[in-house]
Length: 363
Image 1 (tube, rainbow, N blue to C red):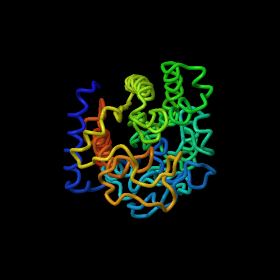
Image 2 (image 1 turned 45 degrees about the vertical axis):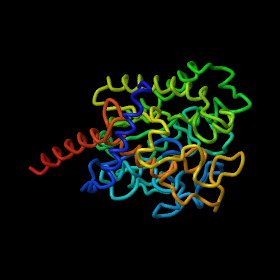
Image 3 (image 1 turned 90 degrees about the vertical axis):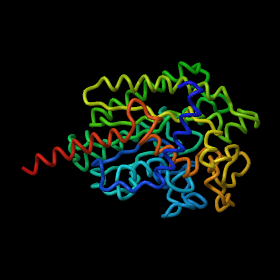
């Protein structure tokens, strides 16, 4: 998407968000199950028992969430929480860690803070659950619960992965092996090759309705601005590398849509600019809302936070606030940042298919 379209796109997001804020709740669950994969943007507690730096089961995380600190990397709900609400689920999709066996019939969240596409990604953070391991956990969960393949084909799947492969691998200092071996195009190609393998495994396991979230402008996060950006602006080297990855990810979506029954879509998190969020009153994009200690990226435990959280893009030095998560989730579900389908089109098709089957079964 060209930069000139960015302003109009994110203004549309503002309109969608305003409508969503006053729209009535969806009545009834619109899809039988919902599975979530990814990194800290989607993680809702899978890292709590791990020996890792990527763990946020403490205040001020969750300060605005009804259950308090749960392991979500935000002040409140994350993107999958909002998508689940929009799809009519009564409760958030629970983390795989600690979930009951039967929950695999309704949905599980496998996402892990610091998780990546490459196995070595985020070794500097300690324990984490890579995408390969998340797919293995999904296999174990659905086999143990004996979830029918016919049901799995009607589920919704969302995946947000790849940021750590840049933040905690390719652009780490000193340079990692990946940085020494690959130029940005080669590195993106290696990531997409692995991603293709894991998506193929999910497809074999029944995944047909899959939203793949691209990487956002991680070169403009407070963490990267302070380090690779020299403290003065976005690190364009990082953003340009992300563009290469996103372009290849969109092509991967096209490839999978050639498979029987597949409805894959790409969710664009890159095109919006911080200035565009001013239409929502979200005006602070150059610093975190919570207190982050020098050289760190996560909130200091029990540290002060900004009182006007709905004005901030960033909750900590990497992750976004609940208000941004809500805007993105609504835009991916209803509107212009998902292509060639938005998530609501998945849900409508699934709901019609399920209703038709239930109607036939009643005779």
